[in-house]
Amino acid sequence: QVYAEVDHCCTALSERLDKQDFFFGNRPTELDALVFGHLFTLLTTPLPDNRLATIVRSYSNLVHLCQIVERDFFEKNGGGSSSGNGEGDYDKLEELVNMKSLEELNQVPT
Image (cartoon, rainbow, N blue to C red; front, side):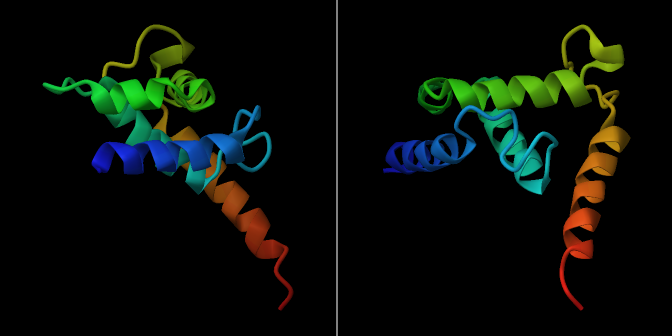
């Protein structure tokens, strides 16, 4: 049942993302960060059973989202491989996400 739910969630996310790099425009938002965190964990954590990663990998646009976020925000100096050593550009990611949030707040009538 868990595998069916993961597949169902991935289907919904994949359909919403479609062919875009990010869910809402050309810059990442909180949703992109949230989805990346969950999917990247499933894709990179060694587990005795690979089924969750296999399900995620069947959605190429979701894998592409993870690759973009990893490349742009977590690879040191824009090259190499993310090692999980905490040396990624977290400030840059947080700044972009917060800037988008502030833009959305400014569009709300007061």
